[in-house]
Image 1 (cartoon, one colour):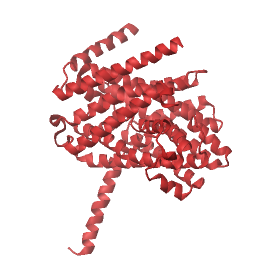
Image 2: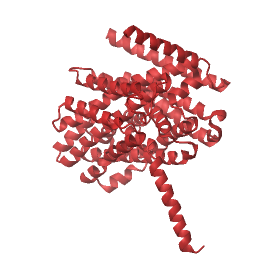
Image 3: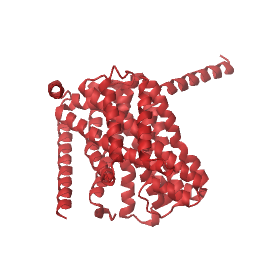
Image 4: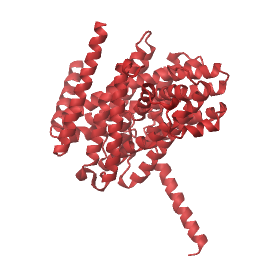
Length: 59
Length: 424
């Protein structure tokens, strides 16, 4: 029963990935720049969190 | 037409508009008042104790900040008939879709825990054990959605919004001086100088003004309510009224705490409530505790729904409050599961609740910039928004506000991770 439940949801996630594979918004230069800045921002936050995690562990 | 007939028709037109507004109002008022959640009340109480009425002018600035961000969700929801999660998936693809969805669900769940912390602390003041508060809140919130009607849920929630105004009589009870309150509206620097602590409190207050769940919640609520393009002006007014009310409540909290507990370092709003009682302001303390419970409840009502709506939109489940439990089992299961697990965490002895409270800020700030930038990009898509797309003036204001929010909330999250940077 659990296996079926997981299988059904993996299938659903696959369907969602297929459904939204191609973004509808036209990827103009401005949109690309915004998305790139967002990725860099996220990376910055992840690095900060990792740094905090390491300093807490080594303290 | 004689003047009396003209006046009669004018009155009829106004009355019709008021009645229409009463029908269409809701999402903006609810989301804005729920913004003053348990965490928000703690921030305002700590700010009031630190700076008193002299901080009021900063809060007034938050009215346009909150309004301009949230009114974009009204337009986007009414035009696209889609929630924010679905809009991100559809327009920006899988990566940003899954990132936003998982981050939102995690952030909502952690925030929900903080709401339960606030509610149990508030009821603890009246001697109610945390487990009774938690079970009572879960049953109440289950009862609110059982009717299977959005309208009923919204009007019951608005009734709870009224309790949020309890800080207003509390402020009159503590007899603040008119001079201090009026002076607070004039921009000033406490002590005549700008310092790290003052900057920290500005960041904290702006950081609590816009949370990711608010964007997702209001857009989904607009869709669930069935608002259309012609309802946008009413939706905007609803949002404006909500943003004014949320700041009015915040100002009154600052007046109460700033008048009775000036210079006290407060850790939470429940502590402020207890101290008000011991300082001989029993009624104000009781009102503060009731307000804190109500704030946590309103936050919990909205936050749990924001996750359920977002998951329902993406997984294709029936996800409307107009559906009965049988018709939308997954929607209500997620709603209930979030509530039960969040309440359970608070009841675990020795659970790291302070760490959770701090961690919420950091998780929220990973999602907020993305949600805000997507909002601006979508509102600039003429093909999608038509005549409701942002014009130049709206773009200038919105981009400025979004940049300020992103910078300040990021600095606030950094100050949470590294308190020594801001002398905390």
